Image 1 (cartoon, one colour):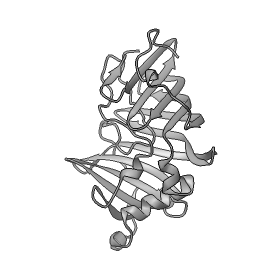
Image 2 (cartoon, helix red, strand yellow):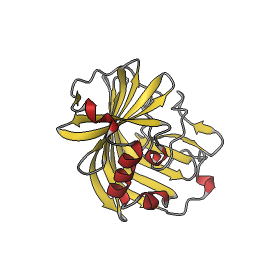
Image 3 (cartoon, rainbow, N blue to C red):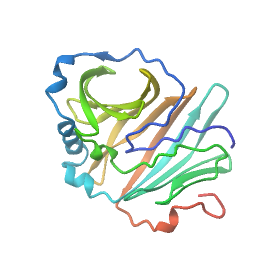
Length: 241
């Protein structure tokens, strides 16, 4: 499978860059409230919603996601099996299997690897990337209305671009992320259908739009703090699950 794939990474606060998407559903509610809340307060509220505390989020040393992923573009619709493994501090492997072929990409702690002809994102995802947001690398930017829900808006600067995150005011959970360049939304990621797994409230549907493609991850199972040997973060010889 040689066509370009949008690689969707969970608990990762930077979106894969994609072609421009115009979004008209976002409305600023309260610019005057930008200074009333801090990034730290939003992150703490998020951690409380997900795990009860920030300390509980920090205790997650490995994470495995198992489910399916559906990719749709203008000419093709594909569904396959998905498996993603993360291990602190920065190892991960992403496997997507469809029609007898498996696409693999990841980071072994020192270098990226992939069996995909076109390179995937060269940014290392981490478990609960939200934990690393602070008033030093991000800022609170008021409140927005996201799909009818009031949400805090947190912005992280990324050089000439920025990552915008929206956290539900009532629940504390993350609703949406946007990758923005030159004031244009280039990629959108939506988190929904949160369910409990071993005491952690995690999204089971993750939708990503960009580059003329729409991707939906349906997570059936999360495994938290399972033992993962470092040898798993490499290309298997048979390149299958």
